[in-house]
Image (cartoon, rainbow over all chains, first blue to last red; front, side, top):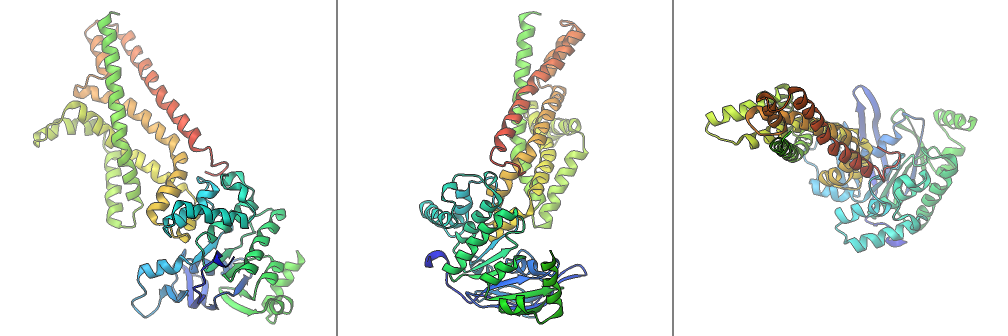
Amino acid sequence: MTELVNDRGSGISLAGVTKRYGDHVVLDGIDLEVPAGERVSLIGPSGSGKTTVLRCIARLEAIQSGSITVEGTEVARRTEKRTGPPAADVAAAMRGVGMVFQQFNLFPNMSVMDNLTIAPTRVLGLGAEEARARAEGLLELVGLAAKARAYPSQLSGGQQQRVAIARALAMRPSVLLFDEVTSALDPELVGEVLEVIRGLAAASDVTMLIVTHEMQFARDVSDRVIYMEGGSVVEQGPPDAVLADPADERTQRFLRRLLDH
Amino acid sequence: MNEVVVRSMLDGALVTTEVVVLALAVASPLALTVALARGSRFRLVRAIALTYVEFLRGTSALVQLFWVYFVLPELGATISSFVAGFVVLGVNASAYAAEIIRGAIQAVPAAQSEAAQVMGLSTATTMRRVILPQAWPIMLPALGNVAIDVLKASALVSLITVSDFTRELTQWATTGVLDVTLAFTLLLAGYLVLSLPITWLGHLLEKRSRRHLGAVA
């Protein structure tokens, strides 16, 4: 299992990151340090900016101020300093970042096997055989060894999401971003996906940043839970502290509302 | 109907088929190039592509054909009526097809490009392996219509002396060899028959293109 992920590790760092859509502030100068190997869950009401944090780290969103560092390389910046690292260095650092999406986003025109091998062959330059062997190992890990030749449309949502996790792992990332990965699933399929992530957390030292509404899961898998609201970090700490005994009134209100449902 | 007339009809139908096939061969790479250029990150490239599309859609295909056939020689470039015919029809169709391809590309969910980007795939690989294969079934029905439009518009080449299906039959009608009603009814029926393989091919490609996509796209 040690060869699952790269251990280049210095984690992720956000310094004063602001994200705006027009006048609407989504991230309000947020600071966040995630050391290598830590598992952090981001919780909070919708619109709190937690998904945007992941999208900014993945460079799917431009930021308006601040800087984001991944594995020691500044990958996004809007600061006074004029020059950032070369694009090749940014690309190299980003190769260490994998992301799993709420809607899976598998490529429907490719078999499961091709979904898993395209990036390792195209981006890492792996040979076809090596990429295939790696993919087979990962499919076994997520319990879908028999589905290599299937197409995404032939799989259940839970299976698709497990394939998506395997696809992210195929790049041997040191950082994994999970964006509400069970929110689009039927309730009975949530467990199998969370089980895979739990197993991954137990068996590897990959850095994880998890946006989730599954509080029990956040509690089990995280070293730290961060409660966000209005684009800022309201409260953070060990899961037992934040989830069972929150200090801030806003966190209390959020958790109470969850329990009411 | 004597044998000479039948032979000339078949020859004309063959010429029409050649003009259409060659026009589509000209149109396909042009349309894809222009569609991609319309989405370029460089403003100048986008502007050139937009001008190309608007110019071709905003001027008459017949006038374009006359211009190439009658004006180009004045400028020192002689071109055979046959070549002028399929090139102009192809270039003209490429403008319409480019817009269809561009629309289909935009119809592929942005999340697909995002997933590819996070995986580190280059823009070119993403387009070729992820976006275009998913845009293909979306664009096919409309591209089939363009192909049929090319067939119908191909009758215009008869006006620059290409001996296509239309020219052959109208000649027999105007010279009194064929009854006018019969000649033009044969023309109508002939184009319908020629359009059937295009329709059939379109359906076949559509069916094939969707076989793995399930409910998606």
